[in-house]
Length: 471
Image (cartoon, rainbow, N blue to C red; front, side, top):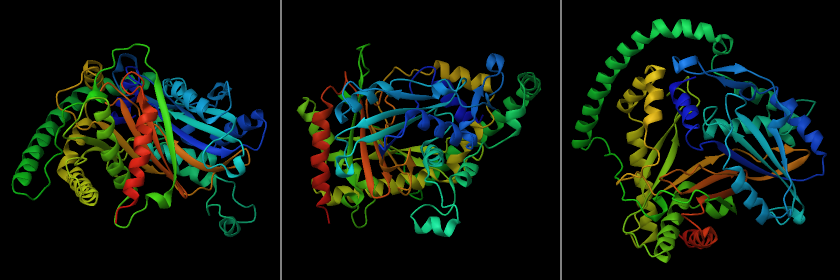
Protein backbone atom coordinates (compact mmCIF):
# COMPACT_ATOMS: atom_id res chain seq x y z
CA UNK A 1 0.00 0.00 0.00
CA UNK A 2 1.39 3.38 -0.99
CA UNK A 3 2.01 5.89 1.83
CA UNK A 4 -0.77 8.16 0.51
CA UNK A 5 -3.24 5.28 0.69
CA UNK A 6 -1.96 4.13 4.08
CA UNK A 7 -2.54 7.67 5.34
CA UNK A 8 -6.20 7.41 4.35
CA UNK A 9 -6.44 3.97 5.96
CA UNK A 10 -4.94 5.07 9.26
CA UNK A 11 -6.96 8.31 9.29
CA UNK A 12 -10.17 6.28 9.01
CA UNK A 13 -9.59 5.08 12.56
CA UNK A 14 -9.80 8.69 13.77
CA UNK A 15 -12.35 10.31 11.45
CA UNK A 16 -14.94 9.37 8.83
CA UNK A 17 -13.35 9.63 5.40
CA UNK A 18 -15.12 6.97 3.30
CA UNK A 19 -16.34 7.68 -0.22
CA UNK A 20 -20.06 7.38 -0.98
CA UNK A 21 -21.15 7.08 -4.61
CA UNK A 22 -24.92 7.27 -5.12
CA UNK A 23 -26.59 6.03 -8.30
CA UNK A 24 -30.34 6.40 -8.86
CA UNK A 25 -31.92 3.76 -11.11
CA UNK A 26 -35.47 3.00 -12.12
CA UNK A 27 -36.76 0.22 -9.86
CA UNK A 28 -37.95 -2.71 -11.98
CA UNK A 29 -39.12 -4.82 -9.01
CA UNK A 30 -36.24 -7.23 -9.56
CA UNK A 31 -36.07 -9.45 -6.42
CA UNK A 32 -33.53 -8.23 -3.90
CA UNK A 33 -31.93 -11.67 -3.73
CA UNK A 34 -31.27 -11.45 -7.44
CA UNK A 35 -29.71 -8.00 -7.03
CA UNK A 36 -27.41 -9.43 -4.38
CA UNK A 37 -26.41 -12.23 -6.76
CA UNK A 38 -25.64 -9.68 -9.48
CA UNK A 39 -23.37 -7.73 -7.11
CA UNK A 40 -21.63 -10.93 -6.00
CA UNK A 41 -21.08 -12.07 -9.57
CA UNK A 42 -19.90 -8.72 -10.91
CA UNK A 43 -17.65 -7.87 -7.96
CA UNK A 44 -15.91 -11.22 -8.39
CA UNK A 45 -14.68 -9.95 -11.78
CA UNK A 46 -13.39 -6.60 -10.47
CA UNK A 47 -9.96 -6.95 -8.83
CA UNK A 48 -10.38 -3.81 -6.70
CA UNK A 49 -13.50 -5.31 -5.12
CA UNK A 50 -11.76 -8.55 -4.19
CA UNK A 51 -9.15 -7.22 -1.78
CA UNK A 52 -8.88 -6.16 1.83
CA UNK A 53 -6.11 -4.46 3.79
CA UNK A 54 -3.69 -6.45 5.93
CA UNK A 55 -1.62 -4.61 8.53
CA UNK A 56 1.93 -5.49 9.53
CA UNK A 57 2.44 -6.00 13.30
CA UNK A 58 3.76 -2.89 14.98
CA UNK A 59 3.21 -0.95 11.75
CA UNK A 60 6.80 -1.76 10.85
CA UNK A 61 5.76 -1.66 7.22
CA UNK A 62 2.84 -0.31 5.25
CA UNK A 63 -0.33 -2.40 5.06
CA UNK A 64 -0.76 -4.53 1.97
CA UNK A 65 -3.74 -5.63 -0.09
CA UNK A 66 -4.66 -9.31 0.08
CA UNK A 67 -7.30 -11.20 -1.84
CA UNK A 68 -10.71 -11.93 -0.35
CA UNK A 69 -14.16 -12.98 -1.51
CA UNK A 70 -17.50 -11.17 -1.46
CA UNK A 71 -19.48 -11.51 1.77
CA UNK A 72 -23.26 -11.32 1.91
CA UNK A 73 -23.14 -8.55 4.53
CA UNK A 74 -21.52 -6.27 1.96
CA UNK A 75 -24.98 -5.91 0.40
CA UNK A 76 -27.36 -4.04 2.72
CA UNK A 77 -31.00 -3.35 1.89
CA UNK A 78 -32.52 -0.50 3.92
CA UNK A 79 -36.25 -0.28 4.52
CA UNK A 80 -37.43 3.33 4.87
CA UNK A 81 -40.25 4.31 7.27
CA UNK A 82 -41.86 5.94 4.23
CA UNK A 83 -40.38 5.18 0.79
CA UNK A 84 -40.08 8.80 -0.33
CA UNK A 85 -37.26 11.18 -1.16
CA UNK A 86 -37.36 13.02 2.18
CA UNK A 87 -36.93 9.80 4.17
CA UNK A 88 -34.23 8.65 1.76
CA UNK A 89 -32.18 11.79 2.38
CA UNK A 90 -32.62 11.35 6.13
CA UNK A 91 -31.44 7.73 5.86
CA UNK A 92 -28.44 8.80 3.79
CA UNK A 93 -27.41 11.07 6.65
CA UNK A 94 -27.14 7.98 8.84
CA UNK A 95 -25.30 6.00 6.17
CA UNK A 96 -22.57 8.62 5.64
CA UNK A 97 -21.93 8.60 9.38
CA UNK A 98 -20.63 5.03 9.13
CA UNK A 99 -17.25 3.67 8.12
CA UNK A 100 -15.98 0.45 6.63
CA UNK A 101 -13.02 -1.41 8.10
CA UNK A 102 -10.74 -1.98 5.13
CA UNK A 103 -9.03 -4.79 7.04
CA UNK A 104 -12.33 -6.71 6.94
CA UNK A 105 -13.79 -5.51 3.62
CA UNK A 106 -13.09 -2.08 2.07
CA UNK A 107 -16.52 -1.61 0.47
CA UNK A 108 -20.21 -2.33 0.76
CA UNK A 109 -23.36 -1.49 -1.18
CA UNK A 110 -26.46 0.12 0.37
CA UNK A 111 -29.75 -0.34 -1.51
CA UNK A 112 -33.05 1.50 -1.11
CA UNK A 113 -36.06 0.14 -3.04
CA UNK A 114 -39.29 1.70 -4.33
CA UNK A 115 -38.45 5.33 -3.57
CA UNK A 116 -41.25 7.58 -4.80
CA UNK A 117 -41.05 11.28 -5.77
CA UNK A 118 -37.34 10.98 -6.59
CA UNK A 119 -36.13 13.75 -8.93
CA UNK A 120 -35.82 13.10 -12.66
CA UNK A 121 -37.76 9.83 -12.61
CA UNK A 122 -39.81 9.36 -15.82
CA UNK A 123 -43.54 8.88 -15.33
CA UNK A 124 -43.00 9.22 -11.56
CA UNK A 125 -41.83 5.61 -11.47
CA UNK A 126 -40.26 4.35 -8.21
CA UNK A 127 -36.50 4.58 -7.91
CA UNK A 128 -33.86 2.13 -6.78
CA UNK A 129 -31.08 4.04 -5.06
CA UNK A 130 -27.72 2.29 -4.70
CA UNK A 131 -24.90 3.80 -2.62
CA UNK A 132 -21.45 2.30 -3.03
CA UNK A 133 -19.47 2.95 0.17
CA UNK A 134 -15.73 2.61 -0.21
CA UNK A 135 -12.64 3.06 1.94
CA UNK A 136 -10.62 6.07 0.80
CA UNK A 137 -7.54 3.87 1.02
CA UNK A 138 -8.96 1.82 -1.84
CA UNK A 139 -9.61 4.70 -4.24
CA UNK A 140 -9.85 8.42 -4.84
CA UNK A 141 -12.89 9.96 -6.50
CA UNK A 142 -11.84 9.24 -10.07
CA UNK A 143 -10.81 5.63 -9.42
CA UNK A 144 -13.95 5.02 -7.36
CA UNK A 145 -16.07 6.15 -10.32
CA UNK A 146 -14.26 3.64 -12.54
CA UNK A 147 -14.94 0.87 -10.03
CA UNK A 148 -18.62 1.79 -9.83
CA UNK A 149 -18.82 1.83 -13.63
CA UNK A 150 -17.40 -1.68 -13.75
CA UNK A 151 -20.02 -2.76 -11.20
CA UNK A 152 -23.03 -1.17 -12.93
CA UNK A 153 -22.05 -0.95 -16.59
CA UNK A 154 -24.75 -2.09 -18.98
CA UNK A 155 -24.21 -5.52 -20.50
CA UNK A 156 -22.77 -5.34 -24.04
CA UNK A 157 -24.56 -7.01 -26.94
CA UNK A 158 -23.76 -10.69 -27.37
CA UNK A 159 -23.03 -10.31 -31.08
CA UNK A 160 -20.19 -7.83 -30.75
CA UNK A 161 -19.09 -4.35 -29.85
CA UNK A 162 -20.52 -2.71 -32.95
CA UNK A 163 -24.09 -3.64 -32.09
CA UNK A 164 -23.59 -2.67 -28.44
CA UNK A 165 -22.42 0.77 -29.50
CA UNK A 166 -25.49 1.16 -31.68
CA UNK A 167 -27.68 0.45 -28.66
CA UNK A 168 -25.91 3.14 -26.64
CA UNK A 169 -23.82 0.73 -24.60
CA UNK A 170 -20.04 1.13 -24.44
CA UNK A 171 -17.93 -0.62 -27.02
CA UNK A 172 -16.00 -2.39 -24.26
CA UNK A 173 -17.68 -4.75 -21.87
CA UNK A 174 -17.84 -4.28 -18.12
CA UNK A 175 -15.36 -7.16 -17.85
CA UNK A 176 -12.83 -5.19 -19.89
CA UNK A 177 -13.49 -2.21 -17.63
CA UNK A 178 -13.02 -4.41 -14.60
CA UNK A 179 -9.67 -5.55 -15.92
CA UNK A 180 -8.52 -1.91 -16.11
CA UNK A 181 -9.64 -1.29 -12.53
CA UNK A 182 -7.10 -3.63 -11.01
CA UNK A 183 -4.60 -3.65 -8.22
CA UNK A 184 -1.27 -2.09 -9.05
CA UNK A 185 0.89 -4.96 -7.84
CA UNK A 186 0.04 -8.63 -7.65
CA UNK A 187 3.20 -9.33 -5.67
CA UNK A 188 1.75 -7.36 -2.76
CA UNK A 189 -1.11 -9.84 -2.66
CA UNK A 190 1.14 -12.84 -2.27
CA UNK A 191 3.44 -11.46 0.41
CA UNK A 192 2.84 -12.97 3.85
CA UNK A 193 3.09 -11.09 7.14
CA UNK A 194 6.40 -12.78 8.11
CA UNK A 195 7.77 -11.93 4.69
CA UNK A 196 6.71 -8.30 5.08
CA UNK A 197 8.43 -8.12 8.46
CA UNK A 198 11.56 -9.78 7.13
CA UNK A 199 11.76 -7.24 4.32
CA UNK A 200 10.80 -4.16 6.33
CA UNK A 201 13.34 -4.42 9.17
CA UNK A 202 16.55 -4.32 7.10
CA UNK A 203 14.98 -1.78 4.74
CA UNK A 204 14.13 0.74 7.45
CA UNK A 205 17.63 2.29 7.85
CA UNK A 206 17.75 2.70 4.08
CA UNK A 207 14.34 4.40 4.13
CA UNK A 208 15.50 6.79 6.86
CA UNK A 209 18.56 7.74 4.82
CA UNK A 210 16.49 8.20 1.65
CA UNK A 211 13.95 10.28 3.59
CA UNK A 212 16.70 12.59 4.83
CA UNK A 213 18.24 12.90 1.38
CA UNK A 214 14.93 13.56 -0.36
CA UNK A 215 13.93 15.88 2.47
CA UNK A 216 16.96 18.03 1.69
CA UNK A 217 16.06 18.00 -2.01
CA UNK A 218 12.49 19.00 -1.09
CA UNK A 219 13.89 21.89 0.95
CA UNK A 220 15.91 23.01 -2.05
CA UNK A 221 12.80 22.65 -4.23
CA UNK A 222 10.88 24.90 -1.85
CA UNK A 223 13.61 27.52 -2.17
CA UNK A 224 13.43 27.32 -5.96
CA UNK A 225 9.65 27.61 -5.84
CA UNK A 226 9.98 30.73 -3.70
CA UNK A 227 12.47 32.22 -6.15
CA UNK A 228 10.25 31.51 -9.16
CA UNK A 229 7.28 32.99 -7.30
CA UNK A 230 9.23 36.13 -6.38
CA UNK A 231 10.22 36.58 -10.04
CA UNK A 232 6.60 36.26 -11.13
CA UNK A 233 7.35 33.12 -13.14
CA UNK A 234 5.04 30.97 -10.99
CA UNK A 235 1.69 31.85 -9.37
CA UNK A 236 1.87 32.28 -5.58
CA UNK A 237 0.29 29.73 -3.24
CA UNK A 238 -3.36 30.15 -2.36
CA UNK A 239 -4.15 32.62 0.41
CA UNK A 240 -5.41 31.54 3.80
CA UNK A 241 -8.84 32.50 5.08
CA UNK A 242 -10.14 33.19 8.60
CA UNK A 243 -12.62 30.49 9.67
CA UNK A 244 -16.35 31.22 9.76
CA UNK A 245 -19.18 29.75 11.80
CA UNK A 246 -19.38 26.76 9.42
CA UNK A 247 -15.80 25.91 10.37
CA UNK A 248 -16.11 25.87 14.13
CA UNK A 249 -15.53 22.63 15.97
CA UNK A 250 -18.78 20.82 16.71
CA UNK A 251 -19.40 20.71 20.46
CA UNK A 252 -22.55 18.58 20.29
CA UNK A 253 -21.77 14.85 20.58
CA UNK A 254 -25.17 13.89 19.16
CA UNK A 255 -25.08 16.00 16.03
CA UNK A 256 -26.31 14.33 12.85
CA UNK A 257 -25.18 14.30 9.24
CA UNK A 258 -27.51 16.06 6.82
CA UNK A 259 -27.76 15.29 3.10
CA UNK A 260 -29.50 17.21 0.33
CA UNK A 261 -29.30 16.84 -3.47
CA UNK A 262 -30.07 19.26 -6.31
CA UNK A 263 -30.47 17.31 -9.55
CA UNK A 264 -29.97 19.50 -12.63
CA UNK A 265 -29.93 19.02 -16.38
CA UNK A 266 -26.33 19.45 -17.49
CA UNK A 267 -27.26 22.05 -20.13
CA UNK A 268 -28.45 24.36 -17.35
CA UNK A 269 -24.91 24.45 -15.94
CA UNK A 270 -23.04 24.69 -19.22
CA UNK A 271 -22.11 28.27 -19.99
CA UNK A 272 -19.80 29.35 -22.84
CA UNK A 273 -16.22 29.66 -21.66
CA UNK A 274 -16.94 28.36 -18.15
CA UNK A 275 -16.65 24.89 -16.69
CA UNK A 276 -19.41 23.33 -14.61
CA UNK A 277 -17.08 23.54 -11.61
CA UNK A 278 -16.68 27.31 -12.07
CA UNK A 279 -20.44 27.72 -12.47
CA UNK A 280 -21.07 25.90 -9.19
CA UNK A 281 -18.27 27.77 -7.40
CA UNK A 282 -19.81 31.05 -8.55
CA UNK A 283 -23.20 29.95 -7.22
CA UNK A 284 -21.59 29.00 -3.90
CA UNK A 285 -19.96 32.45 -3.80
CA UNK A 286 -23.48 33.91 -3.90
CA UNK A 287 -25.34 31.50 -1.63
CA UNK A 288 -22.82 30.98 1.17
CA UNK A 289 -22.32 34.67 2.11
CA UNK A 290 -26.09 35.14 2.10
CA UNK A 291 -26.51 32.15 4.36
CA UNK A 292 -23.82 33.35 6.77
CA UNK A 293 -25.37 36.83 6.82
CA UNK A 294 -28.74 35.30 7.71
CA UNK A 295 -26.98 33.54 10.56
CA UNK A 296 -25.62 36.86 11.80
CA UNK A 297 -22.04 36.55 10.49
CA UNK A 298 -21.38 38.71 7.44
CA UNK A 299 -18.00 37.87 5.90
CA UNK A 300 -15.61 39.76 3.65
CA UNK A 301 -13.71 36.81 2.15
CA UNK A 302 -14.62 33.21 1.37
CA UNK A 303 -12.64 30.38 -0.16
CA UNK A 304 -13.20 26.79 -1.25
CA UNK A 305 -11.02 23.72 -1.41
CA UNK A 306 -11.29 22.02 -4.80
CA UNK A 307 -9.64 18.60 -5.26
CA UNK A 308 -7.75 18.28 -8.55
CA UNK A 309 -7.03 14.86 -10.04
CA UNK A 310 -3.44 14.15 -11.04
CA UNK A 311 -2.30 11.90 -13.87
CA UNK A 312 -1.77 8.23 -13.09
CA UNK A 313 1.97 8.72 -13.65
CA UNK A 314 2.27 11.36 -10.91
CA UNK A 315 2.15 8.74 -8.15
CA UNK A 316 1.97 5.46 -10.11
CA UNK A 317 1.67 3.13 -7.11
CA UNK A 318 -0.91 5.18 -5.25
CA UNK A 319 -4.67 4.80 -5.44
CA UNK A 320 -5.10 8.42 -4.30
CA UNK A 321 -3.76 10.81 -6.94
CA UNK A 322 -4.99 14.35 -6.29
CA UNK A 323 -4.13 17.68 -4.75
CA UNK A 324 -6.46 20.17 -3.05
CA UNK A 325 -6.54 23.66 -4.53
CA UNK A 326 -7.35 26.70 -2.40
CA UNK A 327 -9.69 28.87 -4.49
CA UNK A 328 -10.73 32.44 -3.65
CA UNK A 329 -14.46 32.99 -4.31
CA UNK A 330 -14.04 36.78 -4.71
CA UNK A 331 -17.27 37.62 -2.91
CA UNK A 332 -16.18 41.30 -2.83
CA UNK A 333 -16.59 41.48 -6.63
CA UNK A 334 -20.16 42.71 -7.30
CA UNK A 335 -20.27 41.88 -11.03
CA UNK A 336 -20.96 38.14 -11.35
CA UNK A 337 -19.39 37.82 -14.81
CA UNK A 338 -16.18 39.38 -13.52
CA UNK A 339 -16.38 37.23 -10.39
CA UNK A 340 -16.69 34.05 -12.47
CA UNK A 341 -13.73 35.18 -14.59
CA UNK A 342 -11.65 35.76 -11.46
CA UNK A 343 -12.56 32.33 -10.08
CA UNK A 344 -11.54 30.79 -13.42
CA UNK A 345 -8.23 32.64 -13.38
CA UNK A 346 -7.57 31.64 -9.78
CA UNK A 347 -8.23 27.97 -10.56
CA UNK A 348 -5.85 28.18 -13.52
CA UNK A 349 -3.16 29.74 -11.34
CA UNK A 350 -3.61 27.17 -8.58
CA UNK A 351 -3.44 24.32 -11.11
CA UNK A 352 -0.30 25.74 -12.69
CA UNK A 353 1.44 25.83 -9.34
CA UNK A 354 0.12 22.43 -8.23
CA UNK A 355 1.40 20.78 -11.40
CA UNK A 356 4.89 22.29 -11.26
CA UNK A 357 7.55 19.54 -11.13
CA UNK A 358 9.24 21.11 -8.11
CA UNK A 359 6.09 20.55 -6.05
CA UNK A 360 6.45 16.79 -6.56
CA UNK A 361 9.60 16.80 -4.42
CA UNK A 362 7.54 16.47 -1.24
CA UNK A 363 5.67 13.51 -2.73
CA UNK A 364 9.02 11.81 -3.30
CA UNK A 365 9.82 12.31 0.37
CA UNK A 366 6.52 10.80 1.45
CA UNK A 367 7.02 7.78 -0.81
CA UNK A 368 10.08 6.64 1.19
CA UNK A 369 9.12 7.65 4.75
CA UNK A 370 9.25 4.57 7.03
CA UNK A 371 5.79 3.40 8.00
CA UNK A 372 6.27 3.83 11.79
CA UNK A 373 7.19 7.50 11.34
CA UNK A 374 4.22 8.29 9.13
CA UNK A 375 1.86 6.41 11.45
CA UNK A 376 3.19 8.37 14.43
CA UNK A 377 2.61 11.68 12.64
CA UNK A 378 -0.96 10.69 11.73
CA UNK A 379 -1.75 9.63 15.29
CA UNK A 380 -0.43 12.94 16.64
CA UNK A 381 -2.00 15.25 14.08
CA UNK A 382 -4.52 17.60 15.81
CA UNK A 383 -7.61 16.72 13.78
CA UNK A 384 -9.97 18.45 16.22
CA UNK A 385 -8.24 21.83 16.11
CA UNK A 386 -9.44 24.60 13.81
CA UNK A 387 -6.42 26.76 12.85
CA UNK A 388 -6.56 30.53 12.64
CA UNK A 389 -6.05 30.38 8.86
CA UNK A 390 -7.69 27.74 6.69
CA UNK A 391 -7.38 26.77 3.01
CA UNK A 392 -11.10 27.13 2.40
CA UNK A 393 -14.43 27.41 4.17
CA UNK A 394 -16.04 24.57 2.26
CA UNK A 395 -15.18 21.78 -0.17
CA UNK A 396 -16.41 21.65 -3.76
CA UNK A 397 -15.46 18.25 -5.19
CA UNK A 398 -16.30 17.79 -8.87
CA UNK A 399 -16.11 14.51 -10.82
CA UNK A 400 -17.75 13.59 -14.12
CA UNK A 401 -18.61 9.89 -13.98
CA UNK A 402 -19.09 9.32 -17.67
CA UNK A 403 -22.02 8.38 -19.91
CA UNK A 404 -25.36 7.26 -18.48
CA UNK A 405 -25.07 3.69 -19.76
CA UNK A 406 -25.35 2.01 -16.37
CA UNK A 407 -28.08 -0.28 -15.09
CA UNK A 408 -28.95 -2.33 -12.03
CA UNK A 409 -31.57 -5.03 -11.89
CA UNK A 410 -32.68 -4.05 -15.38
CA UNK A 411 -33.37 -0.44 -14.40
CA UNK A 412 -31.51 2.34 -16.21
CA UNK A 413 -29.52 4.94 -14.31
CA UNK A 414 -30.91 8.47 -14.01
CA UNK A 415 -28.18 10.37 -12.17
CA UNK A 416 -25.36 10.07 -9.66
CA UNK A 417 -24.27 11.95 -6.55
CA UNK A 418 -21.50 11.97 -3.96
CA UNK A 419 -20.93 13.38 -0.49
CA UNK A 420 -17.45 14.67 0.42
CA UNK A 421 -16.64 13.96 4.06
CA UNK A 422 -17.04 16.60 6.74
CA UNK A 423 -14.44 17.09 9.45
CA UNK A 424 -13.47 19.43 12.25
CA UNK A 425 -12.79 22.30 9.81
CA UNK A 426 -15.11 21.62 6.88
CA UNK A 427 -18.61 21.28 8.36
CA UNK A 428 -20.33 21.87 5.00
CA UNK A 429 -19.20 20.24 1.76
CA UNK A 430 -20.45 20.16 -1.84
CA UNK A 431 -20.29 17.33 -4.35
CA UNK A 432 -20.67 18.07 -8.06
CA UNK A 433 -21.13 14.85 -10.02
CA UNK A 434 -22.07 14.49 -13.66
CA UNK A 435 -23.48 11.44 -15.41
CA UNK A 436 -24.72 11.66 -18.98
CA UNK A 437 -26.98 14.70 -19.27
CA UNK A 438 -27.37 15.31 -15.53
CA UNK A 439 -25.31 17.04 -12.84
CA UNK A 440 -26.17 16.60 -9.17
CA UNK A 441 -25.01 19.11 -6.60
CA UNK A 442 -24.93 17.37 -3.22
CA UNK A 443 -24.75 19.00 0.20
CA UNK A 444 -23.29 17.27 3.26
CA UNK A 445 -23.39 19.14 6.56
CA UNK A 446 -23.24 18.73 10.30
CA UNK A 447 -26.60 19.47 11.92
CA UNK A 448 -25.05 21.35 14.84
CA UNK A 449 -23.17 23.71 12.52
CA UNK A 450 -25.69 23.94 9.66
CA UNK A 451 -29.03 23.14 11.31
CA UNK A 452 -31.10 24.71 8.54
CA UNK A 453 -29.63 22.96 5.53
CA UNK A 454 -32.87 23.39 3.57
CA UNK A 455 -32.48 27.16 3.86
CA UNK A 456 -28.98 26.93 2.42
CA UNK A 457 -30.15 24.53 -0.33
CA UNK A 458 -32.83 27.07 -1.33
CA UNK A 459 -30.24 29.84 -1.45
CA UNK A 460 -27.95 27.70 -3.59
CA UNK A 461 -30.74 26.80 -6.00
CA UNK A 462 -31.61 30.49 -6.38
CA UNK A 463 -27.92 31.32 -6.87
CA UNK A 464 -27.69 28.73 -9.66
CA UNK A 465 -30.57 30.50 -11.41
CA UNK A 466 -28.65 33.79 -11.14
CA UNK A 467 -25.47 32.26 -12.56
CA UNK A 468 -27.36 30.75 -15.49
CA UNK A 469 -28.05 34.27 -16.66
CA UNK A 470 -24.34 35.06 -17.10
CA UNK A 471 -23.01 35.74 -20.58
